[in-house]
Amino acid sequence: MNEAAVGTIGSEAAEGPVPGRAVRMTSPRASEGRGSARRRAALVAAAVAALALPLAACSSGTGPGSGSRLPDSRTSAPGTVPAPTGTAASTTAATTSGATSGTTGTNGTNGIPARLEADGTTVTVGDPAAAHTLTVYEDPRCPICEQFEQANAGQIQALEAAGKIRVRYTFASFLDQNGGGGSKRTVNALRAALAASPDGSGFVALHTLVYQYQPDEQTDGFTVDFLLQLAGRVPGLRSATFDAAVRGQTYGSFVSASENAFTKSGATGTPMVEIDGDKVSNDDGIFDAAQFKAMLADHGVS
Image (cartoon, rainbow, N blue to C red; front, side, top):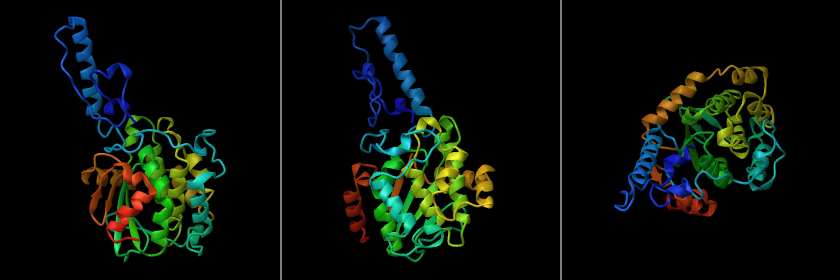
C-alpha cells in the first residue's frame, strides 16, 4: 500500500504519513522564509503525485488501523504455511473438515458450491437461489480485505451453508502495479480451484486460506510454490491439472477480465462490499463480526 497517498500535509508533515486521513494542504505562513516555502511546496507536489497513482491504496475507507497487519502466524517464515492457530485458523479448520454444516463436500469444503457466472468474471458462492446477496470486490494482496475476511469468514460461510445468502466475488489485481505479480497469481489459483471440482467447492477453502495466510503486501509473497502449499491443505484439491494451471497461469484471461470488471464497477479500492445492492461504507463496522452481523440483520439476513 502506498501510505503516502493517505498521509497529511501541513503541521503533520514532519511526522510522516498518517494512514486513514485525507490529504490536507495548508498555505505557507507569511513568516516562513523562501526555503521553507519551497520545502512545503515540494511536499505538496509529492503528495499530489502519490495520489495520482491509480488505486494506490487498497481501500478507499478508513477501517481500523488502515494498512496495519493482523497478528497471526502467516508472517513467520516466508514461503511456508504454518500450522493453524487462533480464531481465523479455527474457522478454516472447521471449513475444511465440514464442521460448520456437519457435511463434507468435494474437497472437504462443507459442500458449499461455487460457480462462475455467465459474465465470466463473477464467482458466486452458495445457493444461487438464496434470498440475499452479498457482493464483495477484493484484491488478494490487500491487507484491508484480509481484515474483512478475518472478521467475517466464519459467519459468512455459515450463512452460505444454510442457504440464506449467496456471495458474489469480483477479484482485482491492481496492487501488482506496486511491484510483483502475487495478486494475479492468486486470482489465477482461485479460478483453478473453482474448476477443480464439479461443484467448485475447492474455491471456498482456498479463498479462506489465502486470507488466513496472506503475506505482507510489500513482500509479493503469493508465489507459485506458496499457493501450491496452501492448496495442499485442501483435501483433494491438488492434481497434475491443478498444479499445471497454477504454474502456467492458465486462467490469465480471467484475471485480466476480472480486473477490468472491477474497474468498470466504479469501485475506487478494496474491499468494496454491498448487501442486496446497497453499498456498505468501509468504516469500522465491516471489520467487526458483531457489527457486520447487525448490518446483515438490517437487510433481513440472519
